[in-house]
Amino acid sequence: MTDADERWKVSITYLHDDGPRETVIYIEEIAELQDIIEHGPDWNAMSDCRITLNGRSGPDGWTVEQLAAGY
Image 1 (cartoon, one colour):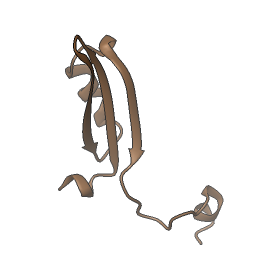
Image 2 (tube, helix red, strand yellow):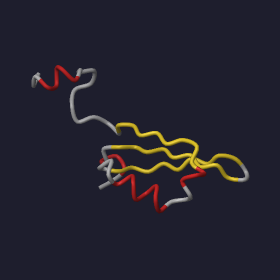
Image 3 (tube, helix red, strand yellow):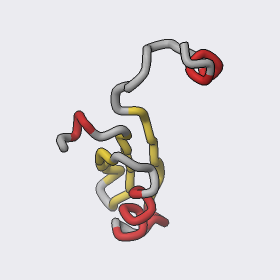
């Protein structure tokens, strides 16, 4: 599987002596993030963590209600 195939893009920013550094990873399941954070740099140095959908499997712009109704 390539980064483009993974469902989620995660951008984690850690504070370093020379300033903030961002790490970007791609994961398929949100549950994977726990181990990544726990085994990465000390989470007390984390200043930001953003999780975004990496592409879509459904139609663009559709609402929760539309998708639940099976449109």
